[in-house]
Length: 199
Image (cartoon, rainbow, N blue to C red; front, side, top):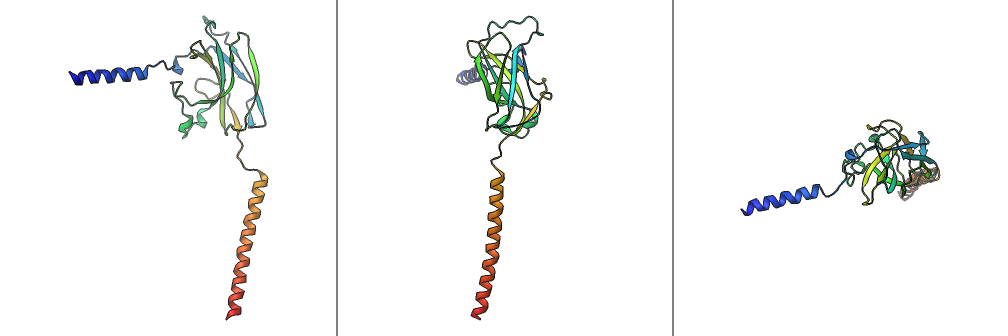
């Protein structure tokens, strides 16, 4: 009897852990449209993108009365997630690491909204798309929209991050390397000459 109660309590604990109110991406309707102004190679810290989003009028029988807040995020495309567990897609939105950069976070308005986002310097080199989520009063995702298709293969753009190296650093490292090599050769000849003088 004790082992049965233990098994039942463990099962209930496990089920509660799974169904603790997490939102699954697959359960969200695609009721927003999102458009990005550019589909080219951009540079972090220099370029910007213009994002326009709003209620998708082509979807029938939808209402936006429960929409309270909207967040627009920069998301990694599948090609930039390969062999990178820290960018892994998960259907559970609390565990999903696809969209790590929030670029807009404001209350929802019914009219079409647009904004310009300056690409920050800390955005790494990758291929991206833009996704927006709308939230209800409980701060749970209830709908989404994105610039790409369901397979995340169209309307992608690339951002080149700052590598941390500049032309001056490269020139300085070459100069120091040449100086070190010449010093080594010079000390070698000086040591050889001193050893000949002693003998």
